[in-house]
Image (cartoon, rainbow, N blue to C red; front, side, top):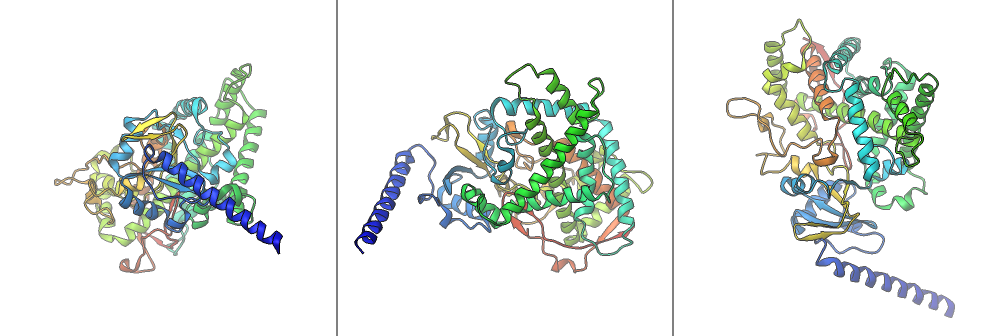
Length: 494
């Protein structure tokens, strides 16, 4: 009895010390760090956050604490930036200071700081420079890649015609097509649409990407140090990413066996050649781990974001048949029906361009943004952010900033049109982020979105099994990513 009483007293004493220490630390930093809700030891601000609606929870806190505030995700201390002004001020005006990469627990468990997306410092700079120049070598931003997209659009049309107007889930129709563009660059070839290994890879990407948007995915962001040892959907997401890693490692081995240093076939070859050139440098960043992870980063990002945006776009167009009709009219007038759309047609198609921008704005693929990290002690709006502080640049809060979009909660292409019906740019359009770590695949994504959407709509109109008023365009999940509702649709020949 006495022993159990002493044990209880000891536990209470420890808990009291932990709480007092936490309060003392917070007070010590209160004059330096941005304000925020008081945090508890280990669980942080978990009790103030709804993991089902993490983005909305953070935006609610910003109403109380302002556009720059501090939140604790478990033991992770994160500074949150809301609205166009705060995000631009950090990522553009103080670009170097905010150029570090923060955590993304689902991917970091595999990447561990390697690869172009989740690395920091000199590694990130070297891999980014190499990736951008190599993608250009393989046609990015040039006529060659446009022809590749047009060719792939032809394969997609053939696959859609094969459905004969039946009601289908468009998910894998779109992801196969989009993925084949980045595959042709990193692997040197496209996949057949019925290739079982390819379909398995797409399923792995979709599964792990969707996990990041779920409540459990957000919980994992807070407590990954514990949850990585427990059973649950986080183990399946990790297994799926390991499957992708194993596939890419196999591709790398195949390229190593048949490599011709004078004639690189794809991104992997170019990286292998650079590895050979730098093998005598002990500190080189061009080694096998960075090759596999960078290829995985490119393959994943080049598949999921564009295909999910298109999938959301189809749903929005079925919800708004008046918008779909206007896009059809503009395609018929500018392109006609006897040739494929070209990227240069965009300049004469302001309404279609506005619709694509509005799909991206409304769809808001990465609402919280990929976490940043300050690279040194940084003064920001009279706050002191210590070196290594993680930062969430809330891209969704920029894309829905009421100072820049009159009715941010509504899907309305007029957000990107002037009074004369011409396309107008908007400083709050940041789906690819901004600053030094912006998505360098932006040019490819823009070209894919325009060419795939216009080619499909040139040939088909969309039909939902529901009436437009019954179509739900609210997202299914919002976390690290935004995932649209599952739906089926028919493609009817025009």
